[in-house]
Amino acid sequence: MKDNNITWREYNVHSANSSGDDDTEDDGQHPTDIFASSHDNDNHDNAYETIQYDIIDNNHNTYITIQQEREYDKSTGMSIWKGSEVMSTYLQQHYNLIKGKRVLELGAGCGLVGLVCALALDAKSVLITDGDYQVLNNLRYNVQLNGLTLLEANDNDDDNVTNEETSVASIQSPTMMVSCPQLIWGKNHAIKFKKRYGMQDIIIATDCVYITQSVNPLFETVNELLQPDGIFLFVNTCASSCSIEDVFKIASLEEFGFDCSTMTDELCSHEKNGEEEKNPVYVFRRQKDIKKK
Image 1 (spheres, rainbow, N blue to C red):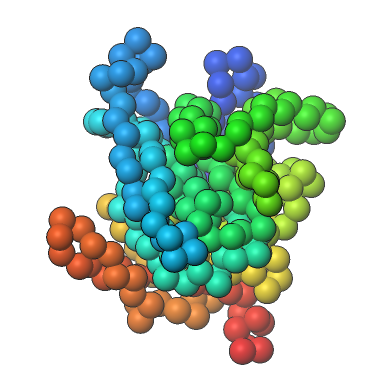
Image 2 (spheres, rainbow, N blue to C red; image 1 turned 30 degrees about the horizontal axis):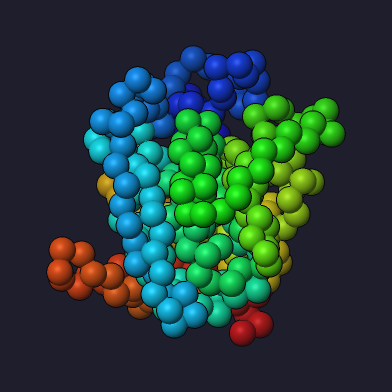
């Protein structure tokens, strides 16, 4: 998508061994390098820290451990953002939204929300995705860190899918499958992704919209991968040049047809520094589905 002749692209969507080919025209203008990690492997022990989250699992207390960067300047996906904490709290308060559902998390970063769905909320399946390969490495590490068996797969049975898109880290629990594939936003990437993983009942995105140019690829992805009666859950607590009104406007375009049935009235109680905060969780459905309700 272009706006004023500037192309929106992730900084680090291809590994060093990748050709870098994708379906986005490259005009040499990349205004936002938002995913580049500032740390190298030699400084790993000093660069990273672990955080433990208490989770309610079928009325029993458990915890999820997340590795993140201690400090960051450009690597948005390498640290926990408030939006993922808000969404995790909201989903625990609305357990039936996830139970038995096929769940996809977009721009998952460190993977907190996807891990909550996989470990505590009885989802049928969970896809925890990101576009940045360094972020994916840390995400897959976090999957292992929480006691889940990590299986590497490289199913290059589709010549139209790039190596990075088919390089999947999967984990399997006794009752469900969780995968951590790369997913770059946009219709063409989503079509390829759908051939491999199918359509989803619930799609989740938190704190991953920073500029207006990213909203159209986001809804192209959601529109392609969400079941007709599915739900898209969205939280954006981070600083952004894109207002929530811009998100609503693009979501409601005829090509997408989404409306936000629950807006600022749907507030998630979230404790921070000993004080309770309330943050909106936006629930998008296709407009024709809303009319049926």
